[in-house]
Image: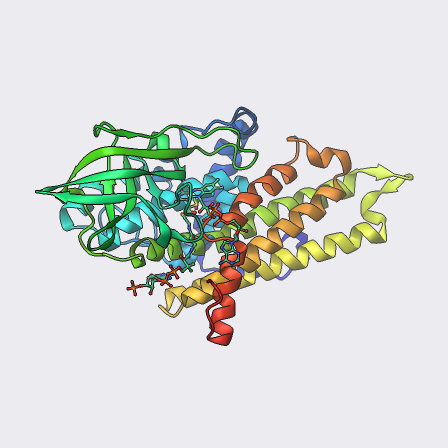
Length: 385
Ligand code: TGC
Ligand code: FAD
């Protein structure tokens, strides 16, 4: 019996998938986690991450060509799971870089844009970010106010984006704006006059991740920096499908880390002269957490296999993101109780994951938005408005 792989789901992975799992986990445990608490406490991002993830070949790993690894969706998911077992900030960086910034260029960019940006982003030599959310436009991106107006062979961009992960360190921001021809994406670079990216402070969640505003004040952008292949909200939403899929897996990692911390702690912590693991109430919690983690893992793997067959629908992604993040939050909360007062400290990963998961529940489409997406698929009736 393997208490930490109860149903032996790892046996369903191929040798290559197991190898990726092991190599990402090794990086997380040996290189990333030792410095994490300091970054979390100080609200700083470990600047060695981009290059390290580039060396691991996980940035845009599910994309093909241009220096990308061309791995399967399941392999990409497994990498997300192991990264988020470390911290959601690590998976977030990978998601934004690979699934939002790189995918946008890969799917909707020109050949020149792909050649100019994708190899550097895949290697982690360059950092990308994604600007969709605005101060007055979150769940309803169609209400965005950021606007680009054509001026000869340039565009003039005005507006403000908020909550952009990696924004202040990005070499390229994928910015979505309304135009006379619909929503379009622009590649905005630091140094373009009128563009600033101040870091946002005061987050109590994802503290080891950089989050920024992106402010555009008459920024002149050449037409060659416009993503030429899409003029609709379909552009950004297609990128979100990719990143949401990564969260389906990432949430399993965060939940697993909390469960394992609780299991280990319960076997060594003694009260009333016995390990707390010997109490029936503790065992019930451990059984519930083990079931939740295993179910979430199976769901992620099933959706991953569907994606590799080209069969995964956006509603199924919503189902998975909603279900697995919910499950992870519940596991984190339960694990926290098993650890007692120690559970609220940084000495254990549980409260850190619990805090991070509040952002994960909200970004990439809130729990409510994904509930309505599933509701619409079930009933055929849209309840968004
Ligand atoms: P709607 O009229 O339904 O659709 C507009 C156009 O988009 C198409 N579409 C999609 N395409 C691809 N994938 C999807 N999931 C799509 N959903 C819709 C649709 O077919 C249509 O295309 P076309 O060609 O006819 O123009 O749009 P709506 O305005 O009614 O909105 C629908 C809704 C609410 C589901 C959508 O707006 C939504 O998903 N809202 C949530 C916004 C969100 O998730 N924001 C995330 C920002 S980025 C982020 O959080 C990064 S976190 C950092 C990290 O991961 O670490
Ligand atoms: P709102 O849309 O204002 O929602 C508030 C509440 O109302 C929620 O509970 C919501 O579910 C509910 N609600 C809204 N509409 C409905 C409805 N129709 N029916 C029922 N309930 C509804 N964005 C980016 O563009 N790029 C990034 O890199 C990025 N990174 C982020 C990093 C972090 C740490 C965080 C916290 C957010 C990030 N975001 C990013 C923003 C994120 O995508 C938004 O926060 C999210 O889309 C929700 O928007 P909002 O916060 O404006 O909430």
